[in-house]
Length: 365
Image 1 (cartoon, rainbow, N blue to C red):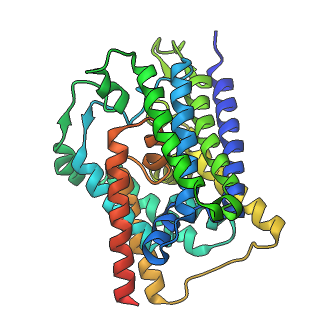
Image 2 (cartoon, one colour; image 1 turned 60 degrees about the vertical axis):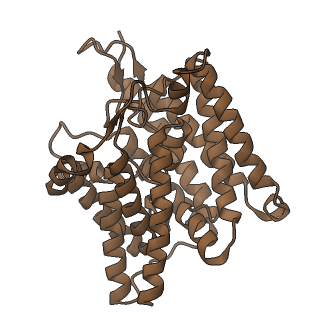
């Protein structure tokens, strides 16, 4: 008999420790998805974009190898569903992109800053979690389901590129996945390291940490925490996941679940989940790094306009992240590592959203 409670503890502790490493590494560097996009638009600098490309390359190649080896099944995620909610991904991606531009960073970056003492980021995270909750099953959830979610394309197979190509190619899906991943990863690595300045001063080591941690999350959730037959229900079980499927890092909906857990703590049905401890781990890892470097300090809003921008940004990230089924880590790294078509659409929307958000900040300055 499998002791589900003990297995859950192992899964949660493992995820928390890995997330702490991720938070520590991100606080030590300038790794930031929003910063990578804004640097290109504002300063024409591709340094942080190259960091992100290296992390994505590791995540994509590693995920396909885990899939080929039979350790995980990429079709047991929310990203590879055969129903392509293309409008939800576009609208959600754009809203999230605008939000992270005017809130000075995505969910991951705000968790890192929160760990280092930023009260601004704490407020952003709380607002993001509240609006994510409202979009999951509240007033915005009803609006989402009856508008953008009602427009979709029903594909004949899963929406990852390997499954779609399998319709015309005579190879097994895992083999196709590895082939595409290696080509895609090689392109990203070549683009990143062809720049001599990035090779010498790009802090690309953090990209390796981020990419490997994404893979470890997949392995913990999809292999270590997978039970083929739950003794209680006799159904397959992914231990401690909110979605009931295999998960990696995603940081919008988990803030809603965390608020729900903290406010309804006395309800014994509310328990910590895989995604929730990842969010907590990033904060703790960042705090340890900031304290060790002597950089931990309380920081507040500079003025009313700054406060308003961050409140609006947090709200848009909450709405957009849930609508798009993920944030820059959820769709941008975790989702894209499965080669899901929805992830490419969402990331394109986020890039457009950041551009629009930056234009708004320029005009309101």
